[in-house]
Image (cartoon, rainbow, N blue to C red; front, side):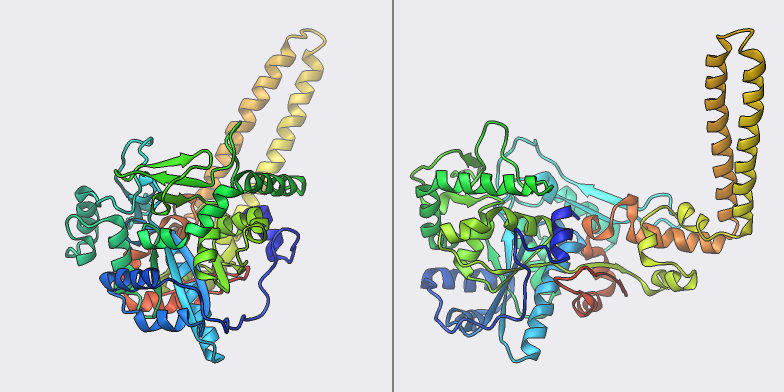
Length: 488
């Protein structure tokens, strides 16, 4: 994680307060337009979620509000997307166990235009020899395309690759012509049984409900720019890198304009644009969420937490209530037979994030230590003999020094490679143990990437279904420094 979030988790509140206690629901009725409320009910109904009663109680101020969000990635996106929703549902369970009714909102970032990031999926390779950790499926379009992804149809070739690899029938949420937005929403609605409300950022009614905030941003454009710049300088002075930087010679991006074709272009200065044509940026999306939903708690990943550190002053400036900010829970998942390797071979979970050779070499038998001792002794003796040669030859030929130095480098390189090869051979001698550890590392640290950042949760859901969802909600620990490994 970035250093700011690590320090913030430890209690540093200079730039962002830490969440404290469980907030009670607001006693006042929320000022929600009937148009916006009906749009939320109807859009969720189309996705398969009946949330009308929950939204009525929320609008009446009878519930605590928790919010998170994510891009509408193909087939549900990577594992951390599910971890975000699970974090919200865990908070809801905890609140309701204390008698505090809670409404969960999950914001769908349908207005983003990074197609190449959304139209991809990585799945475990199912390679018994573990020569390949992940299989990637991707669709691309020119990087300069500015079309919002939420309304783009999922390419048929991408669907075909996924279905063929998993050998599953075509689900309704991948029917021909379905958009990334609708597919994502329908998948989550069918996979997760607990109540939550999906929020499509492209709803015209949502943008019209956000018009007062858009107007305030337009009126105070320069003040907003100065506040973000001032806050960013303060973060830099404290040794942190602001999460979002302005392009050289340009102001911060506050808003985009979406045209009739769905192209999303930066709004470089205040302009008279209808609210339904406006789209928030990374810095103003949290403000829009907070303005519309007045959440008691916002759950975000490390980057989203860092966004708030740059914009806390804007909440006061624009009269938008500031929520409590919490870090999403972090989880990895694996079958029980893979997880058992941790205890069977007396591994520490934090040790997994390396290569199998390195992991096993650290706890290998006496022979590895012996090879290392022999290598160290041989290297010492080699240097001593070379120094003797240098002492004898240097007075006769000063040019020999360069040749000796080159020779030392070559000898040390090849000696080191020979030693490493010997150790790898010893490590792999216990084939059963090596393969088990190799599978563990390939599962939780595939391609030297932390699993939750790249591996799609949908592949595991195909195998474990409801168990996957229930286990993650049970085990996830939002707003903590815990990274849980969940066995399935």
